[in-house]
Length: 65
Image (cartoon, rainbow, N blue to C red; front, top):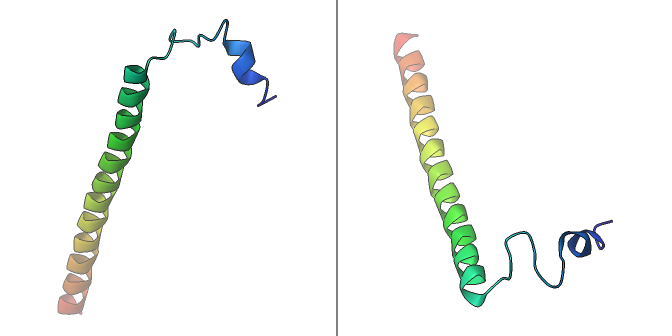
């Protein structure tokens, strides 16, 4: 089924978005790269914030007990 799916959605070499030019493919690939860069940076910021929160909670628990 996976092999036949591209043929089912294409007619005469055109996909859902029409003919794919070099510019379209290039911009799509730049978008994919930008998405993953932003994803990694965002997840790293979230992890850093959670680590700071964990360290603050441990410090408070040690200080109070």
